[in-house]
Structure formats: C-alpha cells, structure tokens
Image (cartoon, rainbow, N blue to C red):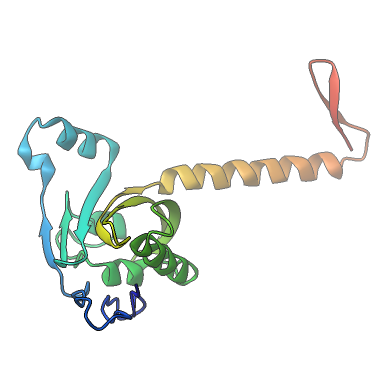
Length: 196
C-alpha cells in the first residue's frame, strides 16, 4: 500500500495497485468544526473547555475531517480562520518540525505507528513560538489501511516556558557554583552530590 504525496501538497492518492481506489485529497476535505462548548454541560464538552484541547477524527477514504472546536486560537489566528486541514496545520509549524510531522502522519496511515505523541512548535503570525502537544492513533482495516485517525491537540506553551525557565535557572546556578572563588558543595541527606 502506498500513500503518495503527503508532503507539501498533502495528498493521499496513488496506490501501488491500480485496482485499489484512490484516496481523496486531504487538502480539500469535508471539514466540520463543532463548537462543543456551545453544547452545554455534555461532559466531554466541559473537559475540552477546561483542559484546553481540541479533538479531531479523520476518515481518509471519505476525506472527512471533523474537529471538536476551532484550532485557530492555538495557532494565534482570529477565531474561525484556520482551514482545519493537515496542510494548513503543517504550514503553521516551525520549519524544523514540519518534516517529522509529515513522517508521523505517513507512518500512522500505514499502520507503522498506530499511536503517537509529539511536541511541536508553531509560529504565530506575530512571529512568537508556541508549543502544541499532539496525540493521535489510527484504527485499521484487515488490509492494514487506516480507516480512521483520531487525535488531540493541546497548547503546552506555558508548560514549555516553565521548563525552559527552570533549565536556565539551573544553568545560572551551576555557573555561579562552578566559578565561585571558594570551595562549595551540595549535599542531600548527608551525601555529597556536587563539589566545585
């Protein structure tokens, strides 16, 4: 089985077997965005809103892509302006994260990677870098072809910034200790763990 062109053009199509039906383009899927927050107190709608995540389900054969909410805010875009296609998503990724994202999708479609988790940087229109975590998994037919892919996208920018700040603080502390003009040490439970 062959999923061709899941790159910049974002197409699935040409199979190795000419008798196999050609998949439709993901660049032109039937997209449905459901604002689950407006559905009141449905438990999963409350979870989506409280935890700040967006879910999606994609049927490659039917070229349908359904989103639980609008991903635009997580990409720094005005509400309702994101096209909700994989091509559009990849265009917002940091250049170093684009190819790995495409490879993951390709591997998931083929069943080589039935589940994945990735932390990806997105570039907002103002040039700032933000982080998203994406989880996804596929369900497969007897021939190994992906019947559906489902996933979750969540903004983890604050978490990533906290990690970066902690690492920078640790680096500064280590620099102070290592360059101190007198001997210094750190112990934990009467065990010396570091000496300059």
